Length: 180
Image (cartoon, rainbow, N blue to C red; front, side, top):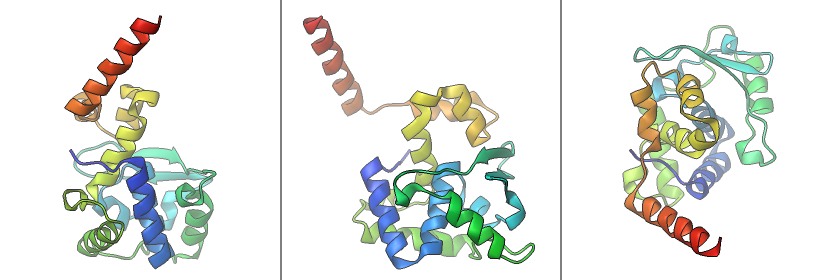
């Protein structure tokens, strides 16, 4: 399961924002709300209301309603730009009027320009990234609900660690034990 480290995410978003503000916002929304490509390109203005986003998830996942994210880092702050874009998008038109295929192409273009390794040039990495970045602080049940998963096993995948992460944790635990 590929995900972007926080510095990789910021590099990717910076490249997208320099290229086109709408593209940056589309990928930021996908990250913050753990959206699939098809879910992002189907978003309509009605999904954005009163500081929240309501997503009809695909693949049998539950619909979710979540607050729009405000962040001190402008690269991670979606609320004002998304509310503005939703207000200026006519009726039932998609907020991000792209095909799923074009979304994939844009993601790969920006990932390459950001210097990400080729094995991370897949837009589903954004969903994996938000889960990996926040699951430990949120807890698995909250993350399960946030992503609209029906199965705890689906969400549990985000708790897996690499050998490197496990070794670093052992090092911290040993250091703490010898100091305390």
